[in-house]
Length: 285
Image: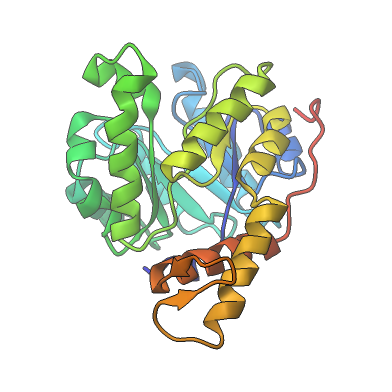
């Protein structure tokens, strides 16, 4: 799919599927996407209830897009979850954990009553090795890393060990004409300064937006990834110059820019024009 056809999301808020009260509050939190989690956030003896509650939630369409993360595709629960969720009007997408290759996506398509947009999580060495093939699948609208599982699979003990993997995900998404991947969650919900620094590092690597586990993280993520006034002015200058010149062109300060730089400037302006999320309350959940 073309990146230009995909709405830009900056904030994705995870909520446990067995907590309908929390899900309801999340829908008013200001997150661009609410991610109802049936996997890691739900205890084994609550899985059936979580699915029933999510089916009830998705009987109606919601103003905020609702994505659902199902359980492991090679486990006993995912098939039933996909079959029950995919006909529902309130489901906007499925988030698939531990995708190892295109065969996993074909399996989900076979289970689905109607195939929704799929978002694939790369959480293993095998998944990273097949990153482009996964991203290029016609049903996939986005990819992301599941860094906690990746650390365990790779034996990585420091964030530096994920540098190549993060770059691989960004390149695979771009090569498949998908939006840039969002960053994985920052686990310390009280450390907003650390979250801001981490978001700045992720943005420099090419990530766009981030998944969150508490609404107090949303405004920090929003501010970190939305273009600054200086970036908007620079992009406007480039786009204005491109309106009168074709090919490589010179800016008033002597810099030369080409078509790729102009395209990036237009992406910056599209992101700046997109409506900012409303500021969520830190106590919303």
